[in-house]
Image (cartoon, rainbow, N blue to C red; front, side, top):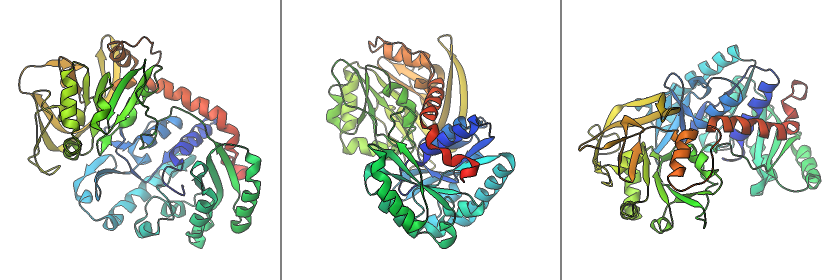
Length: 462
């Protein structure tokens, strides 16, 4: 559990899963409820959080919906689509926050029990902080889970932010006596500097709580995906291929563009302002959980006109999923999925019809003699109203001149597509691996570097 959001729970869970798997344990991750618009598709067509998908890979298990039975996908400040056991549930999505618990907790309990029966070890991730007392009565992800399965709890604080000891001590004090007894250790994450300087503070915290600091995780640059953030995108750089990624509200699955961000000589820039388009070589419109809200943002910021002007320069513009829909002329919302029909940017003659049924599927297809591993997550279907060339495959993508689009997520995670895309921008490098192979290497590399920090995982230390 974390003292705050973004304390490092997902990262530490993933590395713990890998280290336990390397010890020969049959281990699985579990996060009862996740809130993120970064979703993955399981082999049977269910949606789970991208973090739990990566954690399953780290555990050397096939990702499954039981690892993340409840996924909240924000669509507005007070509205989220609820994915229950991999499928969107419109009834639950319309309920008030505190009303959902009676429906969701039995599902969480069933999944937890099932996984306990199947696996030797579960590594369970909480959400936000267990000290958010306003949410305690509806908790299905933090201490309720820990108490239900008598889990050892480790509280994580990001020491790089400052105030870590106050966060740890304050969080501990917010717990009930029964919950405090579940806490076996504190973890300091993202530490930079001389660890000997921590001794006095560690002793103070131990005296106050009786709980030791069991791990200090150093700041370690890595290329594993962020759960739901966009921190590592750069600025335009002279001599680089500069690619803009439009960051409208409810942008989704942003980690699928990580392969671009980590290419030598490529800068991937988070674009939120029209002026940022001036020095770009290419532009990408990513997926969106709420296409209508993203369209409104483009109008409010005048990015819509700036994107249209950028397209006229002949530089490549690519839309993925929700970005595809935005590049079209019209989005029809007869079922009031997002509040009514609206116009797109008009850069391609495409019409989209929103449907209540959601498409979620893993795909494998041949392109330029190479197998592409991709997936689809979308609420609508699109069609060209005048003839267009296909992009990647017929029916899921279209292209006219420098404007292209596709419903296929994960294209850049395939080395053939990534190489082809960058070559057309004048890039001189070589892509050697598919992104999944690269992430596997990163999991091993980071696990090697941090193995001696995770001794608390050993049974005799718990």
